[in-house]
Image (cartoon, rainbow, N blue to C red):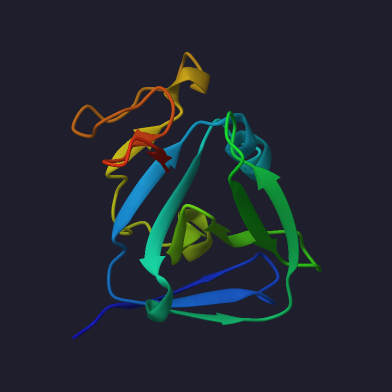
Length: 145
């Protein structure tokens, strides 16, 4: 049986229902994720678009990725302001979903850490995942979240 999970904002007005496990989960310490979450890092689960059903009204904030001309579009609830998901130019086939919005203590752990150059000194990363000072290098020479 395929796992179904629902991520939603604080007021419940915006949700993302997923089918199956994420393709990867990323712990990101970039300054923009720090600002988006109000914490020292963000954790996002990436699902193929066809595995996600989105529901509810959104507002969108588009920003550039540090050091590039690529963009990330954050989709948040216009009522409570909670960012539930985002899309990236670099990964058009995926939707990133904030893992905290699932409110599931058994959610899969991060598979890598990125933008560790901005990591708070008191944060200890899991020793069993790869960590990258910026984004993950891709075979084409670019970088990926």
